Image (tube, rainbow, N blue to C red; front, side, top):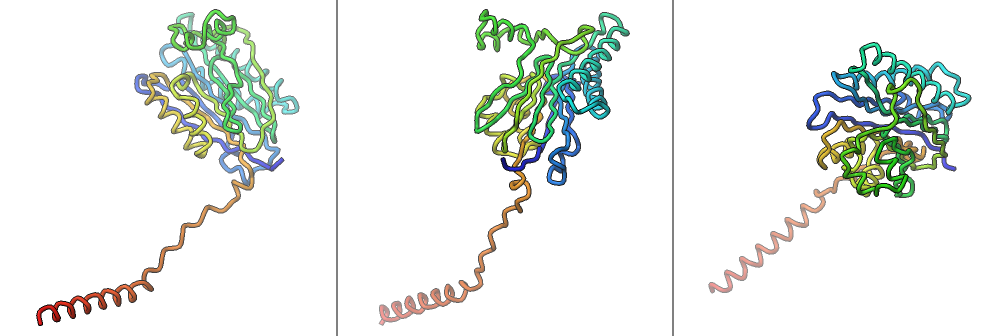
Length: 296
């Protein structure tokens, strides 16, 4: 398999209605310079969508990210799924304790979707309705399962996907960090192939960008440009929530190291000038001769 490196870009926007952005996003700094990084480097990336009044959602989402980053950096990376679960449980306990200390009316919570890549191995942990998608060979697949009321109804056959998208209850989530003392965490493991793209997104993006638009943006542009385009499309499509997109591209090293295409050399028009002027002169001479003969 062709050697590849992970390239990551992200974009987030509070949207057209809300003043505060309660989404939080993170990715390892080494993903900013992938060609110089070792293929065995551990790369962490995550998206969180906070909830709670009086800016408590913003605190919860950032607390989840901060706890995750610190826990992965200090933990035993021999077992990534276990380390992710331990770290996310710690984040849940911190957020729950912080919210409880403020009283029942100030409870806060957050979703979290986190990924760790080492080599070609990707491990994803998920709590809530933020999503992870995989784009492979121009096909989009949702990796995670939404922990939401409508998703559970769809799974039970009590509601169609179209009804779920239109439901007034689609924002009710059944699992989040900070809502209870203990939380169940979903883990997904997959092997990346060269040119795979992984998209992490908050629910402000969902249902506001068509699947073909997502695929086109992810495969046509670099991750940072694609993330900005997707977020802009969601807002233009009617999203009123905070919107965040993080894109991780498992880029072939040969593509990353390829020199930029050279601009086509400027055409040398100086060689054309003399023949063109000569032709014009001949035409003028012929016209003058014809006029003189006509007059005579």
